[in-house]
Image 1 (cartoon, rainbow, N blue to C red):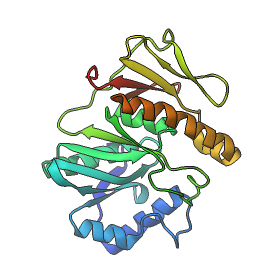
Image 2: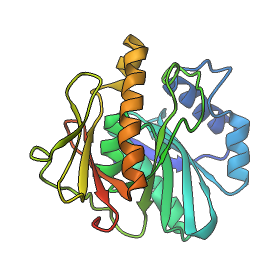
Image 3: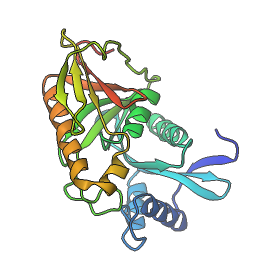
Length: 253
């Protein structure tokens, strides 16, 4: 645990209201119209879910919410944290879920956000198992407004530490798709076992500066992923320079 940081579950009205305000600030919505209202979080906790809050001293610096599902599965509805605390927040969720006997945890994220992909796939060792087209429909918050809400579902095994599946050969693989910027968007090896897909450096900044170009990126990456997932691929890695690795299920480890 980072010195000075503590993480605990939150059950009281005041603590849940503070988490609601934190999520409003992260997603840039008015606090009067939060993405996760306090009464919803309170009901979630009452139903057996968990809201975790990370405190740097007494200052709220991260939070998450999760529910328990059927078949030994848990689902993380939301998680956000300041730089350096995300891993600890996810480990707190993992500890809670394991205490209930859960074996996996799932959640979704925007596949165009490369830093989140690297955190989920390369640091946690989760795998992208489902591509969801415009999952939420139009979103009006300050981060997603003006885009379509495609999401990638990740599945995180809780009973052992995840191991990212890294592969070599991207540079020598033939190009299959061109990106909106004119450079290669995707490559696929001749054996059909792996393919690689690139995302923009910072989709959030791009969306604010040029929404039309951001949407072209959305559609281009969607085409690659939907084709790949239909053929039995999953997302198994993300490089530091913004390239996904996708691996056929019969070859993934």
